[in-house]
Image: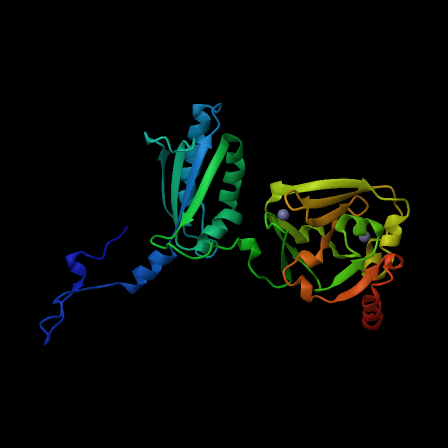
Length: 315
Ligand SMILES: [Zn+2]
Ligand SMILES: [Zn+2]
């Protein structure tokens, strides 16, 4: 957008002994180049619902425009949005895919955009309020002139102490969990064998707030079944699992899985509403975690011998 070719930004060398050299060399402001490379243009297209009123649209538009001054950087307190242009589509070409309005925003960096999208309270509230007005949307982010390279990483999926990233087989659903310790507790129960098609499942029970489904929430299906009498009590008899011991039986267990590839992401049981059971082997690096405990050991298949020997020595 800004140009460095104006005559005021030209350097003329004092002397030039080689006549073939150009006599003027364009002055390049390195800071400007670095800034330009960092700047993210966030392009948002909306198709508004056809049944919304003019005043709804006007109010929403004013609300959006107000983010220019109200959406602030957490450290500097300055506006996050460097520029914002917006208006109705006027193209006569038949390629708008039904999008009626466009919003072009500039942010100084990916970090600023990430904060704006996921945490900045004024924008987060705006997004919630705008949802009922919008039938469809389209979003792309570009760095001016950058033609190659990976997508930006979802801010919640960035590496963090104690936070592990999980994904289903087809990678439509991605999530994070916070674990106190990186380890598997194996469950040999008949349900895990049936649902997983393997001799046991690898799990941890964690507070439900420590699980965040970051991508593909709409692709998570639910399978519900009634826990057999006595199952839960036996399920949680051992070790750390004893903390969630309950006498209640016959309550529902909810299994959440990817609707596309069927990977089981987590389970939730009515008997412990504040906890979820996450599948630890679906986490990145899960294949390097040790197995430190097991439950339903009586269901352990007799050919799973190495495992029994190993657990007996590590416990
Ligand atoms: Zn999947
Ligand atoms: Zn089980």
